[in-house]
Image (tube, rainbow, N blue to C red; front, side, top):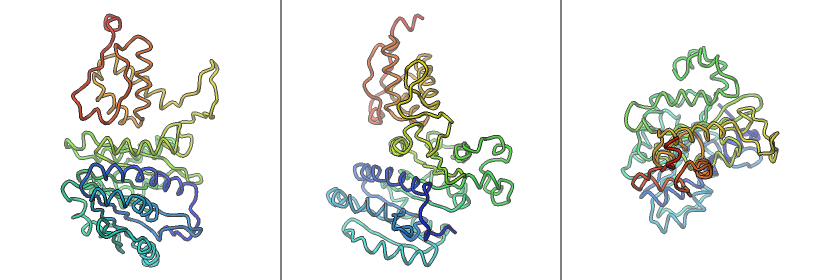
Length: 366
């Protein structure tokens, strides 16, 4: 089991930064949309490294503390559960949690000292409360804790976002070990065919194949963020059944990685330097954005994407942001392909009637 007496490395700090960025935004969204909220930190650790750098429980508690007035004013009850199986770490965790004096009128903060497999029965009632929202952070060591059964049960819970760490490098290296074979995520042939820097992307594909064959599984977001730790590639996987949840994580990811929103290293070997021009004077563009823009243009012009709502969902599904989609619409309008200038594609459109994308008569004739 990973110890926390060492200093957090850059990879761990990236992971924690993503957690802070995502949950800092998500909690405020939860407060405005749901009558109750549950947060579970499944592998909380003691709360900090040896130099006092905050770990996941302190990050989450800091955000809750900063938002306590809003929670009180909106009268939204919040349950926060912090679990750590290791007894020594648990004692430090308990001291940390007790040092936060959140008002009991709207915050119910609990600590647990259980293995992950034994945690679920004690928190299921919170997660499945009708109308509530929940977030789980599963900072497992390795890959074995998030099994197909666990993954599918979490996916089926309404308004439940979850984020988990995956030691993708070890899965790739020890794919033929019985532990990884039993997990059944990827085959050894699939793993052997991928580049080391893309292994975490491939892991996310495996988790997508675990999505249940239901209406909920048909539009569900499984988003990877690859993290380089020394020479190894690991990462986070974020999961949500709500485009707003997916967009919130993607905004955090693109702040962490302004080039692709997907890694703390040059995942596609774009070799882009800030401010660097191309041979013809334009700014360099990452392969991911270039491919997204071309595909969205093609789908709009061939009629496959007919409404702004469809364009928004496609943008999120490809791991891009609404602002990236808007740039495509601006380009098409300036090329004379669209009849209307589109000023925004956003989540709010999903609450409206479908808004058709109108091509110019010239383009239709062409």
